Image (tube, rainbow, N blue to C red; front, side):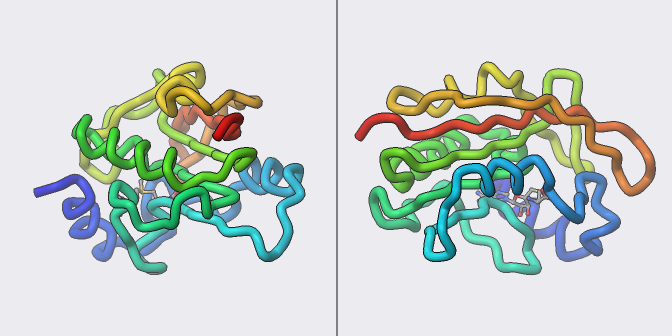
Length: 167
Ligand SMILES: C[S@@+](CC[C@H](N)C(=O)[O-])C[C@H]1O[C@@H](n2cnc3c(N)ncnc32)[C@H](O)[C@@H]1O
């Protein structure tokens, strides 16, 4: 069973606020999105938003080429523990984001948890995230973020803002 399918089993059984990664307002991402000044007509992707909003497989080519102004991923890439699925997701992102487009990715950092909702995750240092996007993408800035779970535990996140620099 793919990681996406395993998550589809786990998530519907939980209320959003009971999931350890739950964050009612993703302030860092919103600040970066505001700073980029994308208008209301900008095309945005929120990979792995929540099953309550409908889940598509971000590793498939769902989007038109260079049609996306903003790709946001909080804690979706890090649940893709199969390298082939992770690579496919990055390939879909590379294809979809237009030159100049914004990419925000938040994953568990090197000191973050090894599991999320009982499932394995991968952890990434900030510096690895932009590199993982490959040529044509550059790091703009990053922020290590400590997320407090609804149960009061600390989770170390690496949060990165990148942009597609070249066609
Ligand atoms: C840890 S949750 C994060 C949810 C939300 N983004 C947040 O920050 O609370 C991981 C999410 O990734 C989704 N997911 C897993 N595999 C996926 C895939 N291939 N494509 C898109 N979403 C996927 C899961 O269904 C789940 O909603």
